[in-house]
Length: 323
Image 1 (cartoon, rainbow, N blue to C red):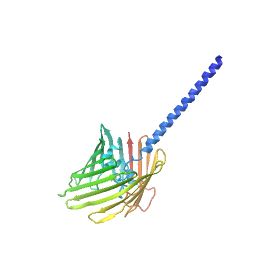
Image 2 (cartoon, rainbow, N blue to C red):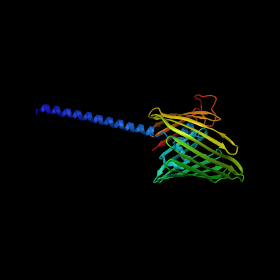
Image 3 (cartoon, rainbow, N blue to C red):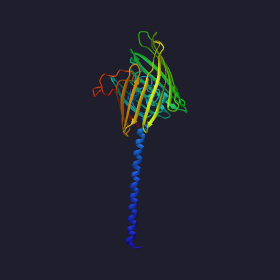
Image 4 (cartoon, rainbow, N blue to C red):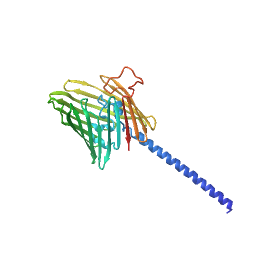
C-alpha cells in the first residue's frame, strides 16, 4: 500500500476517534445534567417550614407538617418520618421567631435536633431531639423540652409507619405552668395512604390545672395528584370539632406546586374556612442549597388589606443545605 494512502487512512481513523470521543464526552455531560435535574425535581418534598406555611397542613393551619402530603416536617407530629429525609440542616425565620435544626444518619439510626420550635405560644427555649430507625417498620420518637413561666416541661412523641398506615401520639410527661397548675397535654392521630388519597384523624386534649385549653377531634381526607410532569395539585377537606364549645369548622385546603426550571420551584396555597387566606412561595436550589420563602398570612390567619412589595413581603424564609 502506498505510504501516502496509509497516512491518509491513519489520519481518517484518528479523526473518527476524536469525533467519537467528543460525542462520548457530550453524552457524559448530558447524563450529568439530567441526573442533576432529576435530583432537583425529585426532592420536591424536601423544604423548610415555608413550604407548609404556603400549602397548609390539612386542618386549616400551617404548622408541624402536613397530614396528607409528603414533607420532611411531618416528623414533628410523627417522628417515624425522620427516616425518610436525612442529612440536612436548616435555618429559618418566620416573623419574630427564628429556628434551626438538622437531621443526619448515625449508623442504623437517624437523629435530628431542633431549637426554638415551640408547641404553643407560651413556651420559651424549646428543644426537640428526634431519633428513628427502620427495621422493616419505620419507627421514631421525639423528646420536646421547653420552659413555661420558667417551669420545666417535657413532651414525649412516638410514631410508626407500617406500609400505608401511620399512627402517632404524644404525651406531656412533665408539665408545669406555675401557680400550682400542672399542664396535661396529649394527642393521638392516624393516617392511611391509598393511592392518591390519604384519610386522617386526630384527637388533642390540653389542660392547665382544671382549665381545658384544647379538646378537639378532627377527621379529613386529602389527595395528591399529578397534573403534568413536575406539577402537583393537593387538596384536602376536613372537619374539626371542639368538644368543649360544641362547635365545628370545615377547613378546605388547596395548593399547587411545580418546577418552573431545574433550579426554581413555585407554589401557591389557599385555605377556605371562617378566615380565608392565600399564600405564595418558591424554592431556589443551587448546589444542594435550598432557599425557601413564603408570602402571605398563615393559614387560619388574616390577610392584610394591601398586597405589595412592602417590608414584610416575605413572611417566612428558610435556608436548607443537603448532603
